[in-house]
Image 1 (cartoon, rainbow, N blue to C red):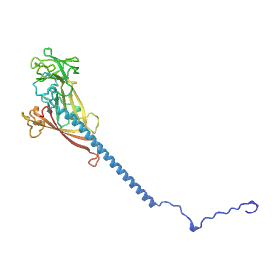
Image 2: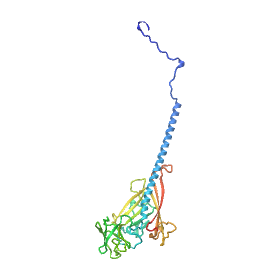
Image 3: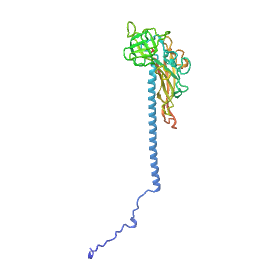
Image 4: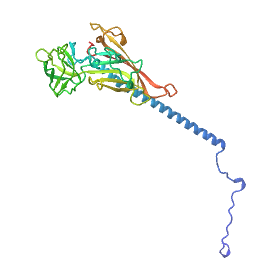
Amino acid sequence: MPAHGVLLLRPLVGPGPGALQRQGGLSLVELMVSLLLGLLIVGAATTIFLANRSSMRLVEGAARLQENARFAVELMGRDIHEAAGMVCGGDLPQVNIVDASKTLVNWATWDKGLLGNGFGTGTGQLTAPSAATAQIANTDSVMVWSASMGTPVQLVAHDLAGATFTTASNHGFSVGDVVTACDGTQVATFEVASKTAKTVTYTNPSVNGITHTFSPSGTGNQAAGFLNQLSAHAWYVGKSTSGDTSSPNSLRRISMTSMDANTGLSNDEMVENVKSMAITYLTADSWGTPASSYVAAASVTDWTAVVAARVTLTIISPDKLGTDGSASKQLSRDIPFTVGLRRRVQ
């Protein structure tokens, strides 16, 4: 240590010029290459994402299309299957005392069982849908009647003179409902004039009225008598009222709820995204032998001879899925199904 307690500091001397170290970094070329590789990776990831998203939308659209198809086939197929059905079964004599002067009388004339393309004006034609739910041009429609749908109520008495049926349990019918009465001998169709919990009255005309006393509960050799509300539905493709602009058409069903011209019909949107419907029919001769081919409604001369209907629904996806590569086309499928009329198919 130096004298006098003074500490001498010697400056540190770095390495010589030949040993200098330079700080590392990226050149412009390396930076550009790195950016390019990053963009390629991001682009590849984006492409995979978009492809997966498009595939998922396509699968989802196809699933919704199939779900709509199943729903349509189930509802419409069951209706056609029960066409001309009767709780008491068999080909029984019929009498219809529904007031022929009423606007909706054709909706209660059910002896044909079903009727193709029946909308329009004139004798035997059905009330056409309103403009808001109008039928789409060049599509088919079908009217279906059945007295075997719903829950029948057994009779315990029929007062022919008093035009009154008495039921074993509460029936649930309303004034204006169109109801069928049947036993093993006859069928009668009438409009409910008044009712209580277990009684139903009707207006019996003096000409072509009900003259048969229906069996109260299977007395003697007669089958038990029943009352059942008439099911009358018209199926067609019409304008959608859902507000979805991607689905301008839908499968619609008009139901007769009463004979009231103002409120007697209910028009419901059953299945969305149905673009069109085509129906052909198979008839059989008096021996039950079916024809060799299905024909259009215009070629059917006897609707009581129809034993089956072949329906083709064209259903589209709710979204444009880019099936043509331009993201401007909706998925479309033709869904064919054939239904036999249970009462007429042996």
